[in-house]
Image (cartoon, rainbow, N blue to C red; front, side, top):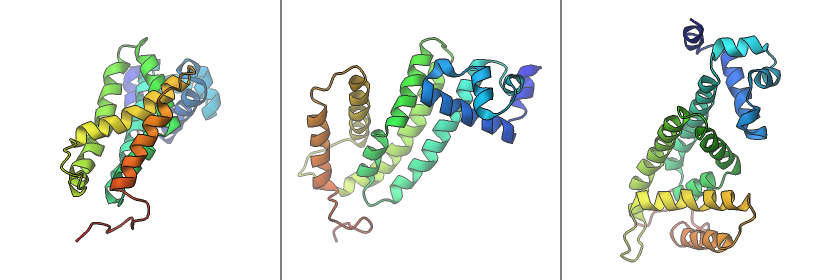
Length: 203
């Protein structure tokens, strides 16, 4: 019955506040800090109320991940309206908060197996949102006959900054600056900052 009560109250403002608080706690202190008592303190509610909405910690983590994914997809949908979609995607991939949250969920998935498939599904939602944009926009760049599949370009743009961020947390830096500079030189060729952001296509 407790699980049914939680599921049946998804539109509650209190529930939304609990999910927001749990996400902040996870980002600030790691997934281990997300306990009923810790989330209740951050949200300003009783621990029992957190458990009422989320009978198991896994349900709370999934709610945090779903909220994070929904907000990310909504924000990235506007990238297609930009005159410089590659730079916008690069900016998203370089977001340290987003990378930190992803790494927390990856670590959590090692201990809670039900989280892994949700992380994967969320990642695919974001990746497919961006791929749809790139498939529309990349063909307008004339790359001297070099064919770059949009999916491969998207993966490289996503993987380079995230791997750099991960390695830097352990003190490994070799090759990071050079790889980032290489990508940014590519952007200077295909999306120069001196060109108008909207309507910059050549006749």
